[in-house]
Image 1 (spheres, rainbow, N blue to C red):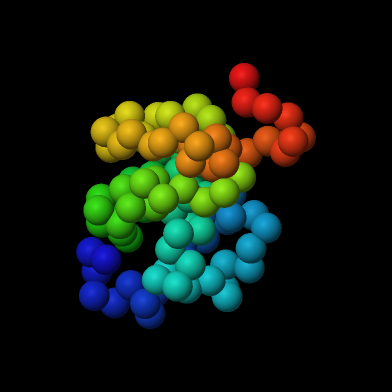
Image 2: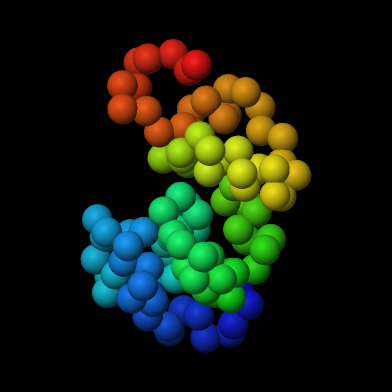
Length: 108
């Protein structure tokens, strides 16, 4: 992490728009970093992204994109960040990472 005291910091309140289904008071910037990074990349606005890059290093953010969580990424968002970080995900990994309303429906 960029800041030595990140563990003691509370999660920024404006992240609530990206983490609406979580109790921000119970989230830990280090322990929940994969979830925080994923959700802010997926749902955050420009100010959220700037703050995310202040809280976490580019390396940490890139690592989350390189190992995407299953079924939570929007296709356009994942495509954007893999392009930004020049990441080539295997097709199978990319497909499993994408959010689908009907999970058994094949990718288009």
